[in-house]
Length: 236
Image 1: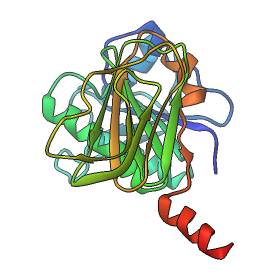
Image 2: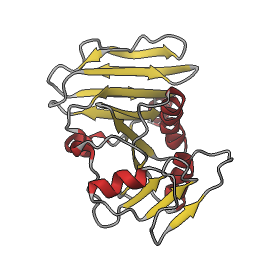
Image 3: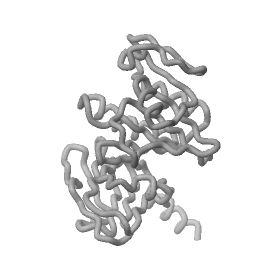
């Protein structure tokens, strides 16, 4: 799997702690007015996409994809599709939180869609960060994390949910998308692990300015599901 990151940046308030620092092999896409945000950060994007209604003009850049104003995909969705097409499976979405509520909700849904494509995305901004886990995945937060962590079922039910190292633990629990049982859990100054056997989880936590410092530990891992463990037992 491509271990490099595709950064997709929409319009955002300038937050020094969230300035992208792409390394060789990473790819940076400006979505509409995210072009201005990146230029203000001193980051030159590899590609600019959008209908540029928010930016107000076609950006002066050698690599621009101009989209129609009326389209099925948002500028953010188009940018993600482009990143997937280029082979990226790790995404950081900036500038997708705050503003219009429906855009924030849509961007949170994109985290689940990325997971369904075999990728993982993080949405960060407004002192908040989020990611999504799908069946058989787990993530371990470092002991340095502090503050709140909320864990929601995206839709239907999420089975075999385990929360360890948090103030309110769960073990092999079934969360329902119709009830927010997992809201406002808390880190305890020790490693915390969230995993799910079947279904989809949305994880949202406080970003205290250490998003990039924690990021290397937060890429999801595959865990064996109960079905796989049972099959393994039958084969012994």
